[in-house]
Image (cartoon, rainbow, N blue to C red; front, side, top):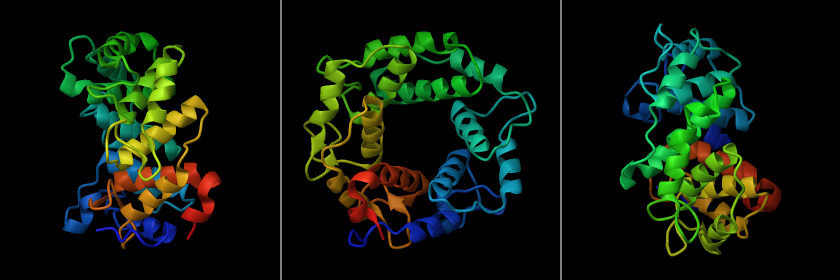
Length: 286
């Protein structure tokens, strides 16, 4: 369990990330449990975190080869998730995939679900299309590959009171607003007000306006939404306190104060910290 007492320990966070590097150069958060199975998502989280901390990334040559091996000779990937994280990590490292990924990416995008998607898949659908928007921008793919799915899912998941989701929440709303921005649509007053209704002087950001809890994904998405709206959160110190509660003694972060540490949550925590620093530097600094 995270101690919740010490300030944000940057050196410990970096050491935790580095301890999760496998022999092939990639990363996996469960390596400490005896598994040597680097994954594209964990490798991206580690690379992005170390770069954000200004730390050197060891064994970059095998790391790049490991990411490149995620792609088949046809240019395809096992899944859209693997494609997104492998290509994003390679871009951060200044490296290219071995094969042109554009034909495979466009096929993935044209298979995106939209109209008729079951409510329990709205969250994953919004996230997948948001990733496609980023990939399309990175690889100069036409918006027509993802637009229809985006428009359909935005219409399905829109809450009449503001926000998006089966029950409107900051994470789904962030992904939806990314799609609206990519489609050239303006933010509505209801969407702007929704996020403010999720703010809380104790938690920083709630999971919904009527929620009494939060987690790392919620706060990370909310801060990114504030950036889209060119606004700042009202309770940055409360968010900083939440981060400290989530850091484990070995340096990694859990999604909540009593959750196991993962590379994903550690990446989110580091990104949140960087966003908060201008406002609550004294509360976050070692």
